[in-house]
Length: 434
Ligand code: PLP
Image (cartoon, rainbow, N blue to C red; front, side, top):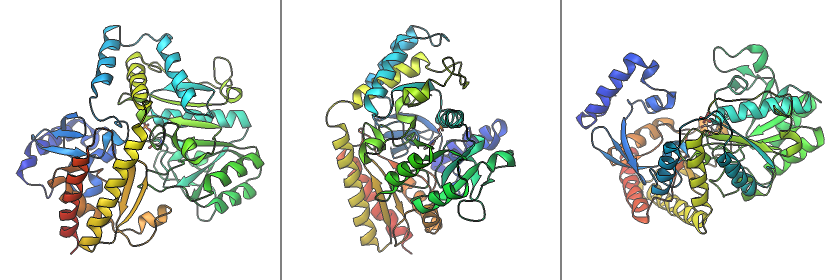
């Protein structure tokens, strides 16, 4: 922790202790705050829209555990469901009726899903969906988009090759070159690049994998017609379209981006919100595809804790609360209020800020032009974001510690929270204007 003064003393000590035993002091890299040149804040507890750190500081939270906490932290009905499930045993390694009850809710929400497999993380969901797509099509290559994140499995830690529609290169040591070459990387929102990939690698592409609302380079919405064109290209080429809705599912609409934009995927990956803050994720699609999974089919996929009873209980409670009328209208209006407040604050401070928002996820990019893909994001003023982050933290607003992430608004945020956030932003933007 460099610039933070003594009110972060406990966090600093906790980090030093963690660094002695955990690589980099954390169990997931972004938590180390390296993206903002600070040391991490250690969290003690959270309730509603607030997180509390080990130094006793309180923050309005826009990380929401990176997406899951759409109801706010420690929602009483979710916590009660977790307690009730734990009282009955924490894991059986055998089927439960609750898994079917959760599957009913997922299938009911997502028009393109007839059958669903529960797993424990978004990484597993995407990795397994891609294996299934490869087996189903008998092909090996996949197309992914630059700036989209699909978890940390080998096929997705791949950067663009040297030209459009070229095979990728590993972006992480340890990823086999041979595997990276099976991934083609196209710019987001560039359907022509995907068309070029199909031309170049005819009959070799098993799946096109995309975040239908990109949210791991900050929020970048799909351009008009983009998802429709991907759908058409996949249909024309016998390729499966995989929507990674780990963030957008139950977030941008109850039925995810598919509901919001009216485009159906062949396979859909879900995570974050469906676990209600516990480790649970899923992938699903048409029965004719999903039946290729073991034990009915030959595609092996398994998990000791898959469909874990506590996570499943949290998931059901979360989805039932979200299915109540008015939730998504409320999320939309909170998101819109935050967007317009931030835009006003930026204009007053004379700081160029481009805000992208889809419902309750949004990002402010320090630039004066539209942000449509990863190259646009990389051209923004990251140094200014780092200063803005520190100013906001100091004023009690907890943003994601990276310029490449979204702000997540929850149903626990109040109009007053949004007002306080905009006030903090006004002062912070003024401070970074120079
Ligand atoms: N897909 C998307 C779109 C994500 O945002 C993430 C995580 O941030 C993942 C997949 C991986 O999920 P997990 O971190 O649960 O493995």
